[in-house]
Image (cartoon, rainbow, N blue to C red; front, top):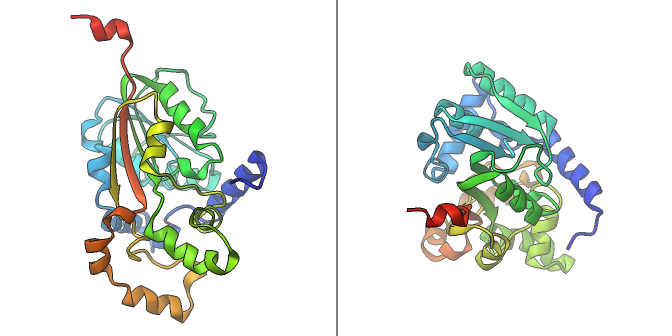
Amino acid sequence: MATRSIPSLKDEVRQFWNSDPCGTRYLEGENEFEAHARARNDLEPHIPEFAQFASAAGLRVLEIGVGMGADYLEWLKAGALATGVDISPASLAKARRRCERAGFHPDLRLADAEHLPFPANTFDIVYSYGVMHHSPETQQCLSEAYRLLKPGGTARIMLYHHPSLTGAMLWLRYGVLGGKSLRRAVYDHLESPGTKSYTKAEVRTMMAGFEDIRIKQVFSPGDLLLNLPSYRFQSWPYRLGWKLYPRFLIRKLARRWGLFLLISARKPMPLLYAIMP
């Protein structure tokens, strides 16, 4: 589907998140990070159960794509030995300031999710929430997660689902008259350039080396229009649509069209360990 070279697309992705780190619209006043955390908890209440922050004390955790550090800070608060990476220097700067304000000394590094600077078998948990589908080579990101996990370690990853209500709305806005498929509308218009979405079957294929793969599908704030409209959707028709959107019916009738796939999987133990009594 890509129409740009991979280096060019990565530069565009980096520039996008540098100019608008994820969640910037929820930063308010002196307590901006607390406001962002409240909004995140309200919009995506499933995150703590999925991430399992509370059970990570003493574990080596790698978060791929820390953004402004909301989840990364939770790993630190839980007592994890957490390292975080991101492709966006602007996002890392905000994440670092957030953690230092909370009294922590973060281990945050600028890095590409497709080529991470760590030895194999290093981490107990690799966590990545809504990041890998923005990278040109999502499969390579998953392969890196596998490489870096210790045998028996767990990956917890959120990827975008196809098809979704968010995709359908973008297709109605940009795809119908433009002759774009639903996936192409997502690729061109959902957040940074080159955003991809996957069926559950495609996810299982990409994660074939893992075991105990579990996938839970949930609505995103975008599916339900619970998020604040971005700068692209500020005109009165969009604002009216936000108010009149039938959220109750959507929750009841469109469960299969949620954007978020919450994926957990384990790196197998070597055969020698598996057969030992």
